[in-house]
Image (cartoon, rainbow over all chains, first blue to last red; front, side, top):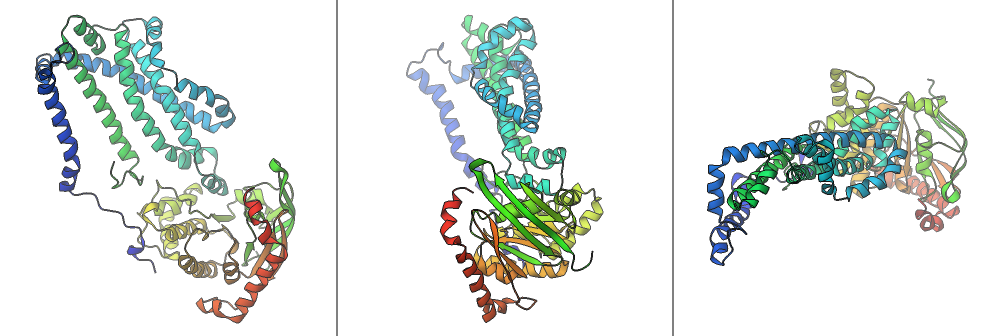
Length: 273
Length: 268
């Protein structure tokens, strides 16, 4: 009675050729962008202090790579630490607020409001709290930056479960632990990962900007700041490239974990991103 | 349990929702015998889904008693005495078909091999063998609903509660699943309480049809369906089938069901 044809057929994974074709426009745009940076900007008279040519930035990046990567790693560790602390606290809070809904309802407006605060404005204050040279002041600002979006999104994910899913578990006389384990947590994962990707970007911003307000002279933010004040624009831009590489790597790592954790998700399987 | 024992006894059940002071159910009395297939039919807002949830202890009645297998509904739910199927299949996307069917068995603490064996039996019952490692979204709506039925029956409950299970399916799939449900019903010997708003579906499937009226929700008539068992595709062409469809329709019209529908849909 049931045939395979009855199942909904989905397009197979694209072939290698198709994937190259799909990425080709993006690669062309990238190459054009670099070319414009290298040749068009100097040609139309953009000064070195505004944006040095691409090749100069790359040369500096090569010559100072040990120093810059060390600085990048230092700042990345601050971002990672803040991300880990902020996100795990946020998930723990979200679980508590989803379990005890009146508490969640009472706090939700303030959480949403807090989510809209430009928390980066607190960076000088965390420096005052944890010591200006301590990495903990940067970790703290990155953690606070990550906390609210992860909390709000995870809580939304944990609570936006269709009523029948809950009724089904109730019909099995399942307790709260089983309900969270089998229904609420799995259905919150797409929300959680969307928030974690945003948080990874925020954590990098928090760490670098935290450095600007004072940090170890080895850190990336301080490196950018001091290079600019010494008119070493190539170094500053090379440091920005390093910050971007760490940021993109961080984001991509989370996206990879997401693909694995949500491999069951219709949007992950075979669908184009 | 003796063959004639009541699986469900509803005594004087009233349910009012405080918001809007709507009386969803008023003084409902109903007894469902072992092995029966009873349909609850009525306009939207007549409380038929609420009545089903009262039986399943998913909604608390304001007054009255509900006994399932001779026990209070709460105890029956805790003993996993019934399986439930909703209008949507409510399958979990993160579980494969096999694991969706095994969910209640996991909660009951069955070990892996016992679960696997039962899942195979259930897949066979709903004719979905070979789909165990698919994910729900890879299946059509009708197939998903069959998985949902397999899950509801996986732990062999005596009672199957169904809330418009085929309401979202096209007519052809619905008729095919009607046949399949009757086959499953006769193979498992379970008792079925089936909510629908399709008159022909109710008559075709049931041993009795309870006609409900809205505002307040009451059972206004119970129509015994004396069509011979087993029902086949030809059943729908018998004169007696049409007579019964007409009788149920007239009962529905007698309570003015057609007039209150729109008004109550707003409240539901």
